[in-house]
Amino acid sequence: MAIKIFAAIDVGSFELELGIYEISVKNGINKIDHVRHVIALGRDTYNNGKISYELVEEMCSVIKDFAGIMQSYKVIGYRAYATSALREAKNSQIVLDQVRVRTGIEVQIISNSEQRFISYKAIASKDAEFSKIIEKGTAIVDVGFGSMQVSLFDKDALVSTQNLMLGVLRIREMMADVQVSAKMQNTLIEEMVDNELYTFRKVYLKDRQIKSLIGIGESILYLSRGSNGGKAVERITAEEYGEFYEKLLKMSVEGISERFGVNAEYAALLVPAAIIFKRVLEITGADMFWIPGIRLCDSIAAEYAEETKAVKFHHDFSEDILAASRNMAKRYKCHGPHTAIMEKYVVDLFDSMKKYHGMGKRERLLLQIAAILHACGKFISMKKPSESAYNIIMSTEIIGLSHMEREIIANVVRYNGVEFDYSRMHLNEELFRNTKGELSKEDITILMAKLTAILRLANSMDRSHKQKLSDSRMNVKNGQLLVTTSYEGDITLESVSFSQKAEFFEEIFGIRPVLKQKRRLT
Image (cartoon, rainbow, N blue to C red; front, side, top):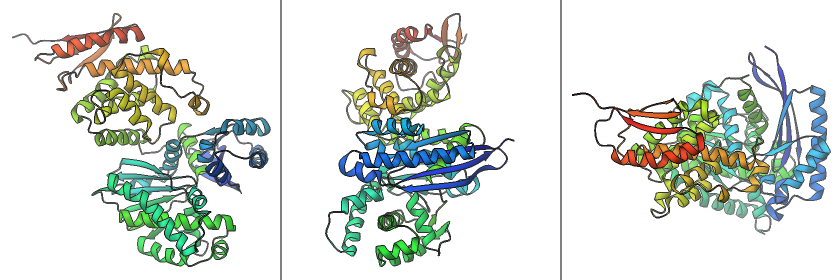
């Protein structure tokens, strides 16, 4: 099979990176070149909310050099992603426009949940090891410059994932004006980390047993090499890490710089990273620490390889997104049997209408998530559950979904319970400039109307919350969507509700839903 040459660019909070990869069906993903340039974009963003003109100049110069390297390798495709520094910068769009005009490189800002999800895909590309490790309780700890992500796995399923504002550069900037000794500063960092992790442990860990920790992020790559004389360590016990940690804290910045082969500025970031991993090891009780050596550029390449079918992963990533959504529904006390049957109904309706709705696999996933979370607002308010559900979903990251996709789901859930108003859609205009794809506001509105119509009809089919129509069959015939059930009991409540929701469904799809009850002859 032909080998594709692909380039990945990471516009990070502390450095710019370029990775060049050979991708083929036979040999998988192989990195053939890697270039990095230290530039602290995050310092400007976290301190001033904007990236300075001087740093924009430097960034454009470096990315132009990257473009030259890409041209020399004759890459057939590239992806350039920007993370928290640009995500949080007020002038991000101006910066991205300057990069595009001066270098010809299109940089996309990706959401935190997208960033962590593709990193997780890169780990999963190591199929055998990853599958074996997550069979038992596992936490993936992704420590970046702006924040960190903790994702919990149990019995091969994603239990939950949370983002904490504990990035190493952010921590260092917060401590910049604190005039204390190095030892005291480390103590303050430990307290800061503990404060966040204590809440996480109380809400998400509880009695959950974590056997292994998977560490990713730039800092852990340097720490792993520095702990073994320059040779990368892939596995280390909690006890061995503790011994390394104690030695590290006794070193000066100059000593760390020399030991790990980094400049003094980067060396100052390694201690906060080491503290974070140490505290996570302690609160989880994990006894094994796996460091797969993943960078964001590797993750971008893994995403591209999967999407182009050059590499086939055995792990089901869509199921992870659904598992995280189901755990979220459970946390907000959604009625389990009703939620499960709702998920079944929306999938059945979607599949039976394939020729008529024009939506694909991704929209099907968004619809499933909307069904899973449609009643989460009742946890906050029984009076205004739809508005509460919207706020819960928009306030909760769902790994693997973009901000735009989360907003679509939140609106679909919201309009499941209130009148669909085309002129008052809750859409953040800023997200249209940062989202992948070319969808307009009108496209998004139509998509939400379609998903809402299906969700409403599915909800009507279990109006009593007794799953009476669980045996129903669906097919389109003669301009009607026939939903047929053999349930022999009373379905008056479902019939009335179904008829009420049928009008909006017909308005959107031009097909009239009809509920039929087949009775056995006695």
